[in-house]
Length: 272
Ligand SMILES: NC(=O)c1ccc[n+]([C@@H]2O[C@H](COP(=O)([O-])OP(=O)(O)OC[C@H]3O[C@@H](n4cnc5c(N)ncnc54)[C@H](OP(=O)(O)O)[C@@H]3O)[C@@H](O)[C@H]2O)c1
Image 1 (spheres, helix red, strand yellow):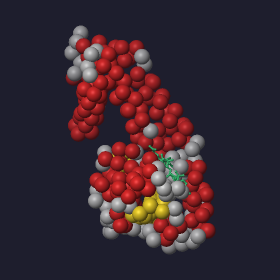
Image 2 (tube, protein in one colour; image 1 turned 30 degrees about the horizontal axis):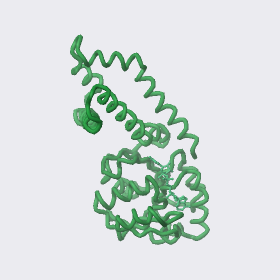
Image 3 (cartoon, helix red, strand yellow; image 1 turned 180 degrees about the vertical axis):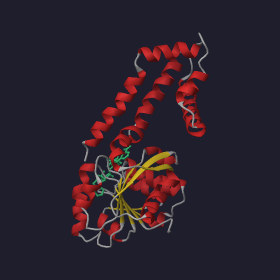
């Protein structure tokens, strides 16, 4: 399998940039094999592309015609028009593997707006892909071969963890691991505020909060142990940790966070 197929990335916003940066800067994907197209290839986005050594154009069809794999990184509401333009230009006639990261946009929708027989994969990555700490979930469309799914996986594996799931889970994945970085940024900010309230310099508080969060998450991933068991181990009877936990429980932290994921999932389902 070609690990670095000619790749067209359509859309160079938050995710297009995060994935491009992760591929070129972090995983050594040859920039010459990337063609990135966006609607307005000028100004700050051009400078960002140039810094990565990537060719940025406004011609999505030309980028797709030269590609073995096409990564769709535009907003869900832009997809229909984009795919119609590609079909009209015959850009998908060679049936490249099409990978869409659009939230709430089903494989059925993609199949209805691409030439018959186009191999389709849905992917749900997140912004930490830019620094190789991403989480991406893949769902393959009908008729996608093992080799094609492996090709999609090879795109995201250098950018972090990759998991295959049934498509029915994609909205929940979007609410949890794709929206999740924003939730964690707010939680990190709150942790740091607590430190500042107790007299820590702001930069120190933020570093402590971020490294602590990284460490706690790594313990769950690396030990495979349940977070409740790990929590119990650091909770001395009548100690400071249980005292802090009581305050968090009073604020209904568990249901607030869980309901946040539920709401994000509901909204994701309606985006397509
Ligand atoms: N943001 C996240 O954390 C996240 C995580 C996982 C998945 N996603 C999914 O990723 C996709 C992109 O999200 P985003 O946050 O990166 O959006 P974004 O920052 O708004 O970027 C969208 C990009 O698509 C370009 N575009 C729009 N129409 C186009 C067209 N017809 N041809 C070529 N380029 C076109 C836009 O160009 P102009 O600015 O020039 O119009 C822009 O560069 C969405 O479908 C979203 O559901 C996002």
